Image (cartoon, rainbow, N blue to C red; front, top):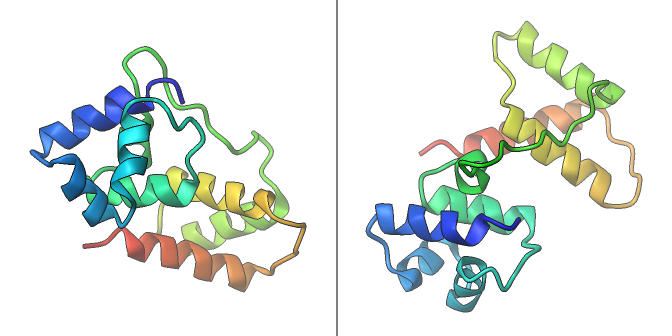
Length: 135
């Protein structure tokens, strides 16, 4: 995440926020925001990035995007069965799946021990993430 620092600082200053204000809004430490802006912390958690993006009223793509490079999708071309089922369900109820949420879910699913969850679990997770971004 080479360009996270400058992008984070630019978004924060666009919103006329001080570093302490952003830290408070995102419920993270001032030190962490400072480290991220100065590229001293190169591996923030997805949870931290979500909190900061939400505090900036931005998406993860907004936070991570640079002019030189596009965001690389996390999910492989051939979706895992659990994710494919979720996408089919969302489309069946008239929702267009949000790629950023799907990426986050894929990362969460593959980050911990291999615990198999059913479609109902993933519907709940998707809806919870989606609702957390609504103001």
